[in-house]
Amino acid sequence: MRNQTESSTKVYIEIVRQLREIIEKDKLKAGDKIPSERELSERLNAGRSSVREALRALELLGLIETRRGEGTYIRDFRGNQLVQLLSSFILQDKKAIKDVIETKYLIELDCLQLVLLKSSKSELERLKNWTIEHTVEDVDFFARITELADNHLIYRIWQILVDYHRSLDNNKDQPTKEKYIDLAKALETGNFDLVRASYRRLRDLSDGI
Amino acid sequence: MRNQTESSTKVYIEIVRQLREIIEKDKLKAGDKIPSERELSERLNAGRSSVREALRALELLGLIETRRGEGTYIRDFRGNQLVQLLSSFILQDKKAIKDVIETKYLIELDCLQLVLLKSSKSELERLKNWTIEHTVEDVDFFARITELADNHLIYRIWQILVDYHRSLDNNKDQPTKEKYIDLAKALETGNFDLVRASYRRLRDLSDGI
DNA sequence: TTCTCGAGGTGGTCAGACCACGTTTTCTTT
DNA sequence: AAAGAAAACGTGGTCTGACCACCTCGAGAA
Image: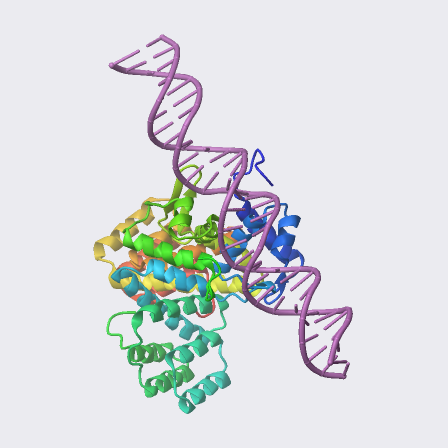
């Protein structure tokens, strides 16, 4: 793998690619262990340091997890690691913060819409009851919503936004419990306009969205 | 920085942190050059390989760019690099693909909504004229929309989704030009229901969303 | 059978050596 | 003196080999 004529692509990138192939070929899933650094370096014909560069990058991306003395494992990636980093890198100016909030609201509304489309009566009722019976944490409530929305990708996006948001927002006072219950009830009606209105009250939104 | 009592955090993570401080302290912006690997390894009292692990991770994240023989530069990160990787990692099962498409539609609708809120009459008219006068590429059209939405974050999310989408979708036949024009006109009315209906026709959506 | 401890495997880190490639400087050559 | 060519230098790219810290597991001791 040393300086061939072509090369062009860096070794560590190539390793990421091949590692992906290995994972696919061996049908490795989240939680499974991948070959050790030394073994990879042999199998892929590269130096261990190059293998490590690839693994470290994947680690920072949150795709793998490394346990000293044990090995390296595939992770059930839900963003995260990367988020914390990106957030500190990116969240600098006021506009960015505004965008985060705006986007988060939109995504949450999207989820509500999906819930309306996909959830059964009983699921919605369970949500309502849970809301009534518990001390509602905002994150928990919307985690349930995003779950019901049954779209893993949008769930991940939301997760990221929550992280972004949290890392900035100093956690102000949360909405009252009643507003969550209202929202849950609105969902039960199946009328998205009611849901949107309820959500607006919850978030205290005056403007559009 | 060698094995102290504490350690716990890996050196390369610590380097990422300190690098961030350096960037902030020296007020480095996109396009600026950061210290060389060797210099960093001295300044931060770490081995060059550790520095490289940190840099490679940041590179894969798309935060920096390295030019052999020249140096390492801060990048105007707009996601991307990471996307391509993540996509190949994540896009495996059918459900994921469905989620991508669903999410993309939702985001695009969100953008349309934002456009309605934020754009001026003249901007909307310009959009319409542009649509009429050009051969409309789907990506180009919605790139304009996301731009008008004036939310950098959601723009980046959309970019990612487009990449995801493109890497799977074999680019089927695009909607006819008329549908884009319809959408542009609907935006001019300022009525979001019309916009949504128009978008639905464009995307050929029968179900909810 | 249970406990202990050490061997072996794994990640974490470093130092040093080359290579490939740009940039800059220096030294020709015209 | 100006222009071009060659060497020196700096930078990233990669490999090797050496330790360290830590975990697991099994052989042998109790």
